[in-house]
Length: 327
Ligand SMILES: Nc1ncnc2c1ncn2[C@@H]1O[C@H](COP(=O)(O)OP(=O)(O)OP(=O)(O)O)[C@@H](O)[C@H]1O
Image (cartoon, rainbow, N blue to C red; front, side, top):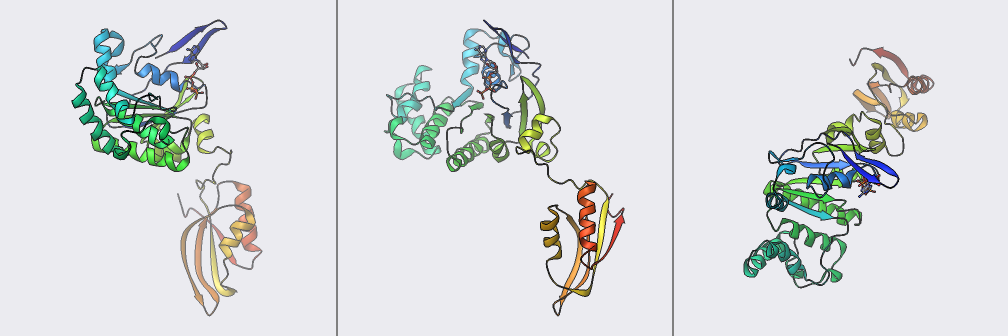
């Protein structure tokens, strides 16, 4: 799928070659830097924006081929929440939630009954008569979530829904979204620029970079092994890469009672500013003397590994380098 905007300054390719499959019940994250194309993508998903090329399949149907009324129906199956909540300021929390029901022809009594249930679900039964101005950001977003759920959607689209909230409120809103996903099986699509949001609740993620999908997959897999530069920038925002232990260089340290039982490994890590992986340890503290042995895996980076070996040798420990302890 592609989306191109025609502007005075020429064509803007907001989305290029997007090919995404979001499964029922997923909490699917879409992450990218500002201008990457996230909002355009979410607007294409519910066809508020028409793709220039390609199709959007929802429940097996191509949204582009639906009649106007069928499209309205499909849109009712996709609730949406936004960064700025978009509540009607002149209406109470209860009336905000009733609104989408009433415009789809539900009677006032029925709409109110459903709205009360939803207020209960989002933990705001005691604020039904409050106006948005009387609610905190987190409470406003809860009302917005209740409103989005009013028409029993199959999908909930969240466009930077927690970006205006503090970390604690963000966590409570994410927890609410997760429980909605688990309780009702509603598929949730989360647009964000924050990796912590993805980490907290998504099972799958697509990373958008300059209008294209740079990487897509399970969140745990992308966190462990980010492949694309865009993913690496998100996982290691300060540029620091964790030490990798893919190498097979290991060191066996023998504590033969000559050394006092001091935190040799901890001191070494601090001194060398490099991490090691303890693979095996059987050490005892006998009368204040260290006895036993330990096998550590050295960092893959040669310089860091050599530094550690030199440290150990210069501290009067019996050390030998063993290769092949790990494969
Ligand atoms: N209606 C429009 N007309 C012209 N260009 C547009 C339009 N909407 C978006 N764009 C352009 O498309 C690109 C993607 O914008 P989009 O808003 O989707 O990015 P985003 O990742 O959501 O960014 P942000 O996080 O800043 O909202 C940008 O270059 C933007 O300027």
